[in-house]
Length: 245
Image (tube, rainbow, N blue to C red; front, side, top):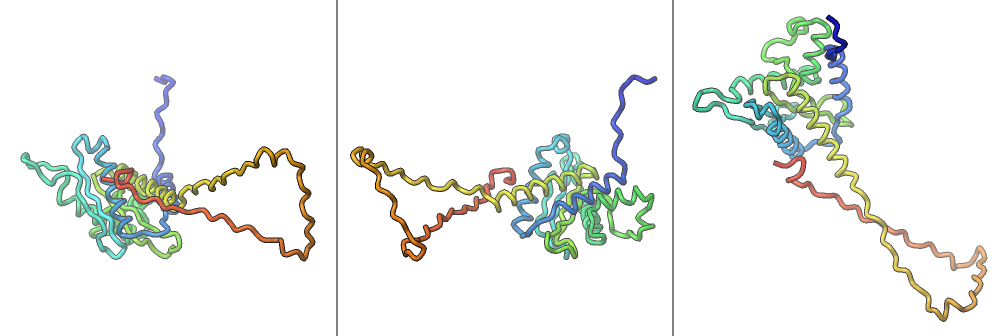
C-alpha cells in the first residue's frame, strides 16, 4: 500500500563510476614526497580509528606505494589475532590490498572505478582480461601529479572489507590533505606596517600654509618611493592538528 514515503534511490554503477572518474581528475597533487605519504597515511589511520566501524571491531590495513611498487607507508589498524583466535585483520587483508593496488597499476584508475565500471557494462573481470592476483574491490586510488598526465606517480590503498567505505575513506583523506597543502602554499599575508603619524606642533598648525613648489619636467626632484615589501611566512606543519597522530 502506498504510504506517501519514498526511499531514496541509490546511485547506479554508471553514476558512481562517473563520480569516481571526476574525483581522479580533480584530486591531483602539485608534488608528492615520502613525507606526504607518511602524513597522508597517518591521516587515514586517524580517521578510521575515530569511525564507528572501528568502534564495532573492524580493522584496516593501509599501504602507500610508488607506481613501481616501493613502499612509502604501511600500517595495520587492529590485531591479527587475539586470545579467541579472531582478529580485526588477517593475512588475507594484505593480499587483498595488494590485489587492489595491482588493479590501479594495470588500469591507471581507482579500483572502485573499475568495479563500478564493470558493473555498468555488465562485464566480468575475465571478459576484461583482468585475471590472476587482481582484486576488484574499492579502496585503492591513484596519486596523479598536475603536470604529469602520462601515468600516476603512486597508489594509496586501504582495505577493511567494505568497498564503498574504503573508497570514501581514501578519497576524503586525499581531498582534505590537498586542501591543507593549498592553505600552506598560500598563507595569509600580514597587514602592511602602520606608519606612525607625525603630528605637527600646535604653533605650526596655526601658521599660514606654504604653497607647494612648482616642478618642471626636467627637475631632479622626482624621486620614486621605495616599494614596501611584505614578508611571506610559510606555516610549519602542526603534527597535533588534523594530520597528527
